[in-house]
Image (cartoon, rainbow, N blue to C red; front, side, top):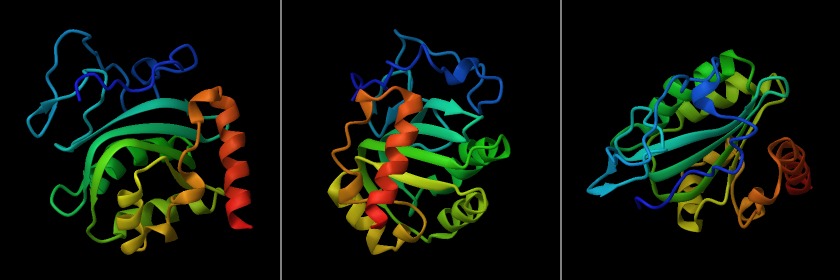
Length: 190
């Protein structure tokens, strides 16, 4: 797991640690010192800690003018034991919403498992952004993770599933990804 880096090809467009509005502003990352672990496995030092011991993230793009953010994840999303959604909502999502972000793309290729609890924080997130035509899209989450999300009815609050899997998001520039995801949302509603 220590070799899996967050997507870095967009660093010329955006870096959360240099964005004064970002919840990760001022973070320093080492390329040599591996300090964060998920269980007994070290992860690449570029991933950001936000309060969960099993799930890390990277805000890889944020555009306040268009209200759009892309967040990549690694680890185990565990709401049942660690209440990861509460940590994510309070530490990352709420500050972004306060800065005008209402469209969220969550990249889940490296989310290995999902353990559900209640849906209160997902519902709150959705309620916070819906009046601004906001949405939450979960791209490329593993099938068993999406199945668990559906089992607890998170599809009421976020868009996930077959229409959002195997999406080649890396081929887009960040500003074009917003348009592509919105097109995907429209197609999936039909």
